[in-house]
Length: 154
Image 1 (tube, rainbow, N blue to C red):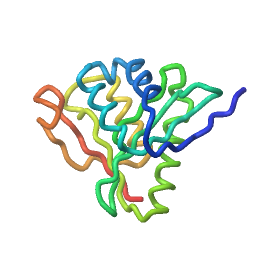
Image 2 (image 1 turned 120 degrees about the horizontal axis):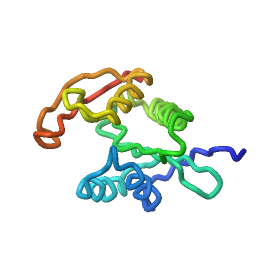
Image 3 (image 1 turned 135 degrees about the vertical axis):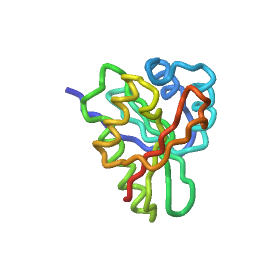
Image 4 (image 1 turned 90 degrees about the vertical axis):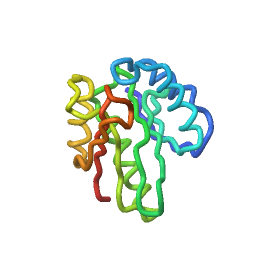
């Protein structure tokens, strides 16, 4: 069995990340959102999970200020869900952020006030990584997509 490697990329190629987003329509089904993620993450560091020659997962990290950062967008190909790849990426990111003095990490996702099985799993994943809900932004992503900000101290 091939080992999964976790590789940092400061800036650059995001084609493999776009392909992963497109493979996850339950989470990333809006074309304008995919385009925005792809354009924006070109200027953020990305951690890629690579098996052989294939990128099977990624996380883009946005630094807000000297003490906080955000998991801007994360995706893992469906065939690799529930295998610990997301957990390993979060751990690697936390280690890197602590090393540069970041104290808080946040993530934004769909709030539970809008029923969605896929995002129920997403919130459970982040809760299992010790993120806690901090604030709901009912209209940040539009009236039909309430956003919850989840945070954790590093």
